[in-house]
Amino acid sequence: MKKISVVLVVVLSLCLVASMAFAAEAKKGTVKSVDAKAGSLVVTMDGGKDETLKAGKGVDLGKVKAGDKVEVAVDKGVAESVKAAAAAPAAKPKAAVGC
Image (tube, rainbow, N blue to C red):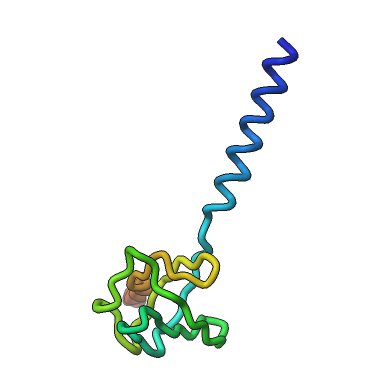
């Protein structure tokens, strides 16, 4: 029973480490420029810093243009996915108050 527990802990630990290795960091920003020929784009991240990213295999740079607000999944300087950023929810109109 003790051996099974140790093996189970080792297997679960390896799965956790492997999943962290493949995790991409999600970032939001505005596209500054796109170079489809070179397969790269420059994104000004929400913090104000420009990042030059290589487009991953699944990224269609033809659908991205300067000025687009995007969410980018970044892994080691490679944009694994680029999609339009979710729009902020519209403000609810205030209800009329009074008699």
